[in-house]
Amino acid sequence: MKKMILFHPDLRLKKICDPVINITDDLRKTADDMLETMYDAPGIGLAAPQIGVLQRLIVMDCVKDEDADPAPMIMFNPEITASSQETAVYEEGCLSIPDHYADVARPKEVEVKWIDIDGVEKRHGFNGLWSTCVQHEIDHLNGKLFIDYIGVMKRQLITRKMQKLKRELARKKGA
Ligand code: NI
Image (cartoon, rainbow, N blue to C red; front, side, top):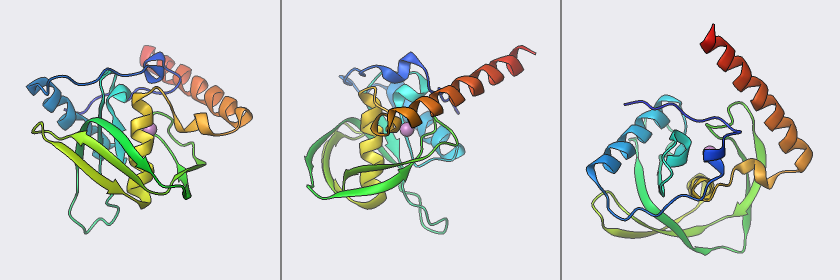
């Protein structure tokens, strides 16, 4: 089922999420809902707090070629275990901050360990868009957004525009 994506600014997007202890059927369902919500948006990654679930769970699929097979990934308790010295800059966006983009520099390659949907520990290296995306999503689990990497002026401008958008959406809903 498609879920509503929370928009910045929202306190739930600033929280440090809890580790997943048991991968319950409920959480598997949440992961499926997150993938559906992400594909529908459309986006390439989504973290549980973005739908108001404050647990360490992310989903992503960075396959951009529409003719290629989808490659959905579900990660519980993802953790960066190694990062390259070399950095790469990508223009990032976020489903919780629609229509705003900014260049962010991050380690070019990272190694991540996580628990998969069957409860099996996985470890894998990521580069390119996958690397940027997994770092961006893990940041969400620590209450961090991509705009936290940019200048304070631009961040405040984006936040004001988002507050205005949220007021307009709330008005429409009330009307
Ligand atoms: Ni995001």
